[in-house]
Length: 89
Length: 89
Image 1 (tube, rainbow over the protein chains, first blue to last red):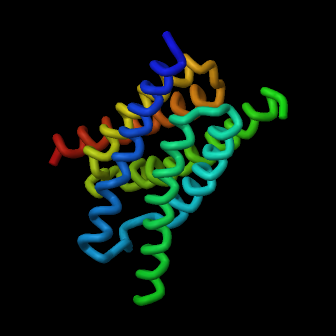
Image 2: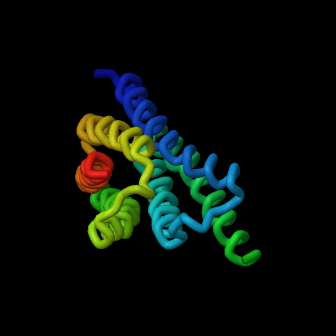
Image 3: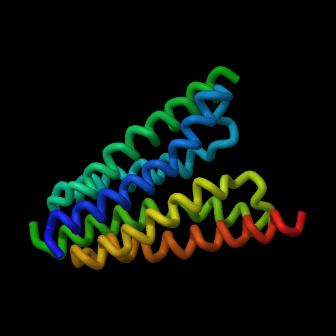
């Protein structure tokens, strides 16, 4: 299997695990409510994603970098929205 | 940076992103209720995790294999429990 084929498999995996968070972001946007979201879970995950990003850069994996870059942005959005919501209420 | 050091960084990342799912599993176990869980999200994520596992094996990354192996088991538990719960009610 070539490196390109392997990276494509990684990118398919990245697409699935990133897409999985979109329903949560959509739900928060639509309801303008993040009270059902566990901030602790997303903060722990966000820290992990940042370290994954460093790991991806170190092992030169486009799939790992892309997956964690996009997921990191989505997670950051969920965390910021959850904080704003908590302050308002 | 040595390969071992890079793998350690990956394993730290894996620990964070895996630990993040534990509060969800704990909540389901304690309440014996998974009605608040989006099965679609976890099924999409489970498919992605299985592909990540193949990718980890192909690029020989202990961190990617460990992270997705453990997360896969946790996600499978959430999905099975959510299905059982839905059938009972």
